[in-house]
Image (tube, rainbow, N blue to C red):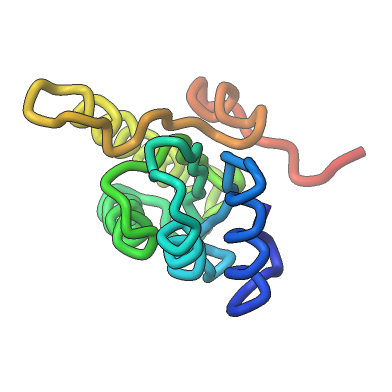
Length: 153
């Protein structure tokens, strides 16, 4: 994972890890380090196809247009044509009511599914999103319209 890492320390750590055989990198738009991850991948000499790259949709980017824009921004920042695993970072978002939160999350999920499906078409050699999923068990509940618990017990 790359949470709380940035700049030169992150770049050096990733280059070293990739050159030593690590092949999974976990980042997120909210970590604000995707461009450093891209630079490290390029510098490592490891082909992108050998790396399993995970990124995540930040809670402020839920909704149809915001999700689409966020995915394109991540692709650009990561200097890649595809992301192997794209997650909904958390079940919360900028909605003000339970219904708005659920609707925004469902819109985000639909965009992720559409981009995943579009990448699998004959017009594209590789998927934009190899896999779209939620990082929590709330995804299944949200898809069915259930409210996520507000705190852990």
